[in-house]
Amino acid sequence: MDAQGVYGNTKFPYRIAKIIAGLHSQATGNYNTGSVLKAVELYSLLQKHTTEKNIVHFLNGERDIRHLGFLKREFPNTKFIATFHKPPAILKKKIPNPAVLQMLDGAIAVGANQVDFLKDWLQLENVTYIPHGVDTNFFVPHISKKKKNTLLFVGQHLRDFKTFNKTVPKLAAQIESLKIKAVVHPAYSGKIRPHNCINILTNIDDLQLRALYQEASLLYLPMLDSTACNSLLEAMACGLPIITSNVGGNPGYLDGTSNVLVESRIIAGFINETIALLRDESRLIEMGKSSRNRAMEFEWINVVKDINGFYEKLD
Image 1 (cartoon, helix red, strand yellow):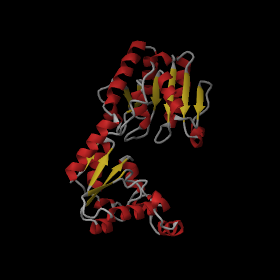
Image 2 (cartoon, one colour):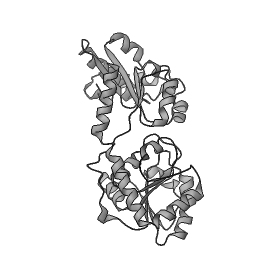
Image 3 (cartoon, helix red, strand yellow):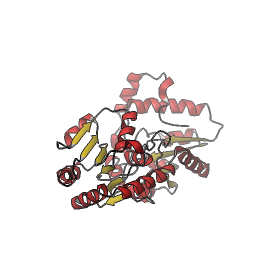
Image 4 (cartoon, helix red, strand yellow):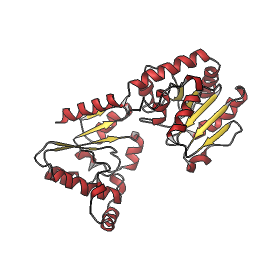
């Protein structure tokens, strides 16, 4: 039973839900009007299945979870688990009071760097690492679209814009006709320092994004931290070579590939490695192949099997 997005049929008054939401502190995780409506609908659904063994999976453990003590008393046949997406430092800062979350029966980490932290933070042994999935049928390579000396930067969450901005002019001075395409939310476009080699793209759809992955020579993605990064997964599935920061969950996702991890905020490392890669076509080809092969391990069918296996362990 998925605890996310289940409130579409609830008749609970929106006005009252808004008032209730306002009474809740955000110190135990994000909680808003939608969270209240989800909780009401969840309670209604569980009432219809009181004689069954149920599992409620909060797909985003950073939000919506408040009433576990009550729900566990009312529905003793139900196990409650959550998937957590944020790095440990952010979880600790954003949720200084994890008391409610410590009532969970299990937790899923999408980054290997979260596991030990979640066990300690939640005081919970049933914590497992299940990598995030990617649609390898949609995100596919297209070798004939490849463009020379084209870097792609995607996203804004935990991106290291400072390193990006410092390295771009030096890369442009060394790589002839360098082109960098940066895909960001419009609110973050100002984070990118203008340069004649950069084309900032906002509000693009999935088809356009896939084409950018397929065209690029290299995903260029300095980061501050990570757990699972969709941009890395999508790029890998499209057979794109990658250079990114050696932080968080990145090493686990790139394990077994020939992609390049640079120590965080090491400007010279990003510059030297990127120049070397763009001048070595055969190496780029091999990196791209290793990216695609690794991405196939993260097909959603494999992720679902792992999640179902975790459910069975808790049953």
